Length: 97
Image (tube, rainbow, N blue to C red; front, top):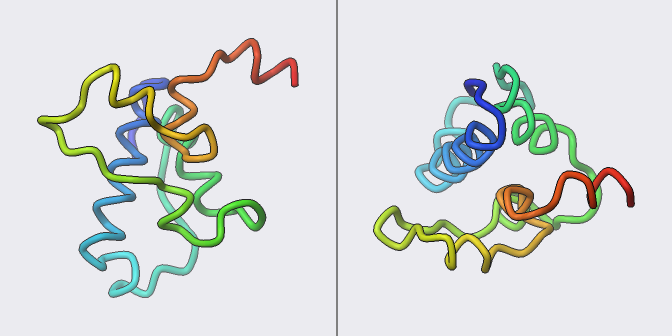
């Protein structure tokens, strides 16, 4: 997963969703390791190490929004517990919790 800040985090989340949907993570013997840097790590690290909250990977990754439906209003519908939901959150508010 590449770097690039918040955009890379959202991109990595989408990549993980796609890999789960087509079964690649399961078919390659996924054991919990991903290669990532910078913003890609913002999605990859929680995906790899979460152990509380989401019941499974699909719940953590959230719903897939098709590119033709990807608009600001659509992004605002993402629940904060989804990885991509962090793109809608205030960093200051998150740090001050």
